[in-house]
Image (cartoon, rainbow, N blue to C red; front, side, top):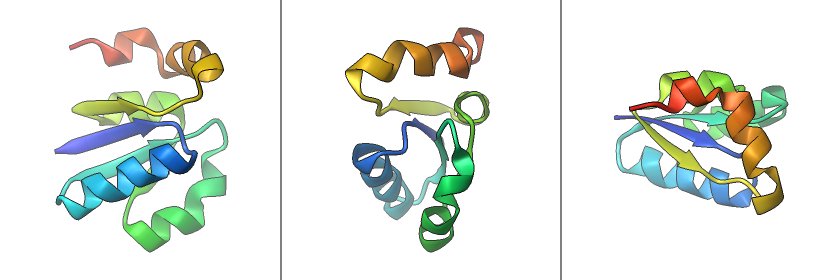
Length: 83
């Protein structure tokens, strides 16, 4: 399954690793995805913007701080999260 993780903090990275270890493809999203390049290389994940992740995932995990959640969803594009 293609799993998108919106949020690149400790929780998002832990979720990403867990999904990868279960055999899923993972794309983790950030406002600045290039900061995740080393982490992605070490885990086998890919990176992108919140919108990239929302388009990629068959399943989306939201792992943002509460105060950042609304903005992350806006950046992901609510239409990309339908279904």
